[in-house]
Image 1 (tube, one colour):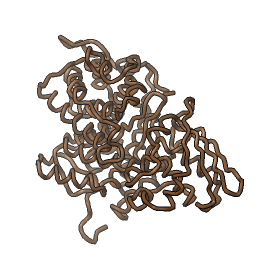
Image 2 (cartoon, rainbow, N blue to C red; image 1 turned 90 degrees about the vertical axis):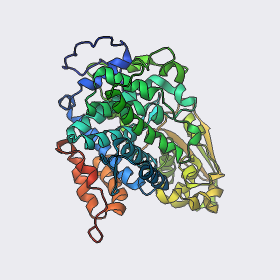
Image 3 (cartoon, helix red, strand yellow; image 1 turned 60 degrees about the vertical axis):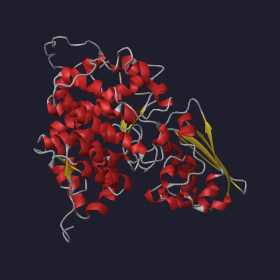
Image 4 (cartoon, rainbow, N blue to C red; image 1 turned 30 degrees about the vertical axis):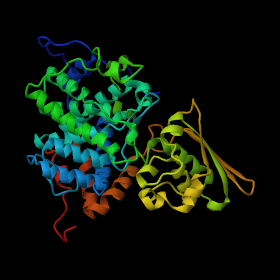
Length: 476
């Protein structure tokens, strides 16, 4: 279960501003007011540290993701349509408009499926790619401080998580990708905060992104999935900009008749939109991935590795593998014979086969097209059976590896590595960042890492992404 509780409209100690004429009451406006009132000084040290951890993780995966072909396609698109040089693209000598920079960085930071995850029994949200991509783009353009951008991220993440929880499991079950639907509200909140929107303007920005909300699970395993995060970031920035200019939309989009909760879920949980005081910030329940694949698979990978206990098992010695997993793992990631590397990222059978064949967790090389069609891995995948256990949490799994010599290797994982209950520590995040950034930046990666950890004290937030530009030839 999520540790979030039902929300007061404003942080403890913040004075409520006078009501604006004609303001629509309800949770949409309460969330907008919460964002408008939130100050960097209101954030507890633990929240600042966690938001910085999210930045370190985001920056690493965004740099690693820049090498993906989908990002190159979107880069050509950005060059084609043009845009004012307002914000930087991670790892590129390219600046473009704030919405387009958010689009490109949103794609890059989700395309590897290595980004952090807010997961509970009610929802699964990748909030950081859309929210930080929007906040950093607008923050650079507006010459905001690191503290201001970090604060906007925390507030935007809170909004995205609240919307995701209010949509509930039925939203995800219907085939929606929560990062695309709920993530855009967080992006609009972060962008609106940095643009100085009023509560009315921000409520309208929520109406603008709400009426565009989309993201279908049918495109998982293609470039379309990370594009959900990219569009959420782009649309959040664009909505904040046009709302600031006077563009109107429904100011109660979440709770309205024919609004988001009525149309996008069969079992709405509107109480999740209400903010308690004192508030436990949603970002504290964010987890960081040790494996570059769908988060639903991680516990099964851990279970396979624990069952092996460091021993190597020849692929031909495996008779069959039985894995008892969360129902979502047994459906969303049940891809017994993926034909591309992207499909393999969402195949529990493939990831278990890799663990058995190589005696380690999955790495990027395991998600190439060649790996997806490798005969040894295909043969192993065919022996993996997934069994849905209704009461099994998303971050848990049990496995039994039956060998041809009669032995059975078993393991039970109550919480996957990288989750809130079994977190990746700062040193683990450093190692992950460097593995992603050093191939792009060389020796500069360590200096960039130090800069990211000090982001909360940076006078110029935009300097962080400007420091990722390719060095002149021979200067790496």
